[in-house]
Amino acid sequence: MNSTPSMESVGLILARDAQSIAEALPDAFAASPVAMPDLLCASTPTAAMAHIGHVDFMLAQPSLAAPLLAGATRLRWLQSTFAGVEPLMAPDLRRDYQLTGVKGIFGPLMCEYVFGKLLEINRHFAHYHASQSQRQWQPQPYRSLAGQTLAVVGLGSIGRAIAQMAKHFGMRVIGVNRSGDSMPGLDQCFSLTQALAEGGLAGADAVVLALPSTPALARRCDADFFAQLKSGAVVINVGRGAVIDEAALLHALESGKLSAAVLDVFDQEPLPPSHPLWQAPNVHITPHISAVTFARDIAQVFADNYLRYVSGKPLLHAVDFTRGY
Image (cartoon, rainbow, N blue to C red; front, side, top):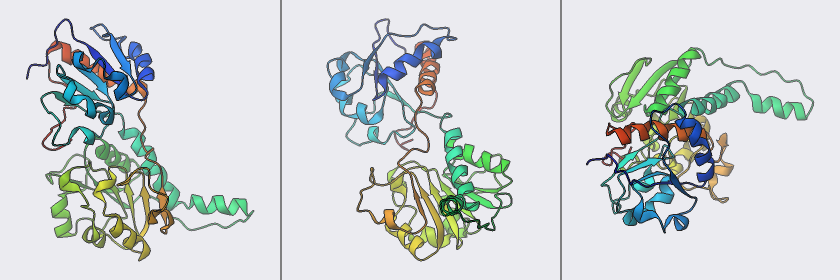
């Protein structure tokens, strides 16, 4: 498919924070050899409806763009504002355009979240906060992250950033990816099937899930997965909630198999007040905030790809519709 735009190309920003992104674009294009395009702005699908038939490219939030695809008859390129593009993967949606994701900007933010939580758990910060409120002086023994083993399941840009950061803490790192092919900085690497068959995760003190949501990965972290882990392991999910069998996770927590679970994503969001995870032992719940989208970062990703778009060059961070990421 030819993605080279015509002189009359029309662009659209479709995001809840569309105005903030639009305000960040001049700085993103300041050093670009091409002029910043004029872009329509909308924060809801309804607001975009009148223009959608004229749009050639979009900088859009996937969930807002999905219901408009059928009417976007001129669409050649959609730059997602999110890392996850699941709403655009529905089998009844068109796929005759180039879809690009966001990579490289969420890794540092995810690292802050993951290692902030690992330090909180290993250093007993919650205990000390509670002790302070009671004016109690109660030192606790703790473990350094150095020398511990971290397994990172999912080695996209976010997983790789987490693996690299683990090395700065002196951790041993096991990687799990689709192929099982190793990457620099890993002490071992497995495919997920291989890891489960060979006990590749059995030595991990903590397991970080950084997986996308695809049909093949739905509920992949099930009872067999948790049974493979060592007693007392910590599980952190910053990928997608659908990859975890929540009933199996609850059993692993209630049985004491896991010492803690840190969950930023869930199969249903917001997590319903009646969900048993709220009351499960040693669960740290956060409302999908491990890496939020900053307008300046999204604007720069778009500016870099727009230069390629108008030059007819391959776009960065292309999404494979077959794989779903």
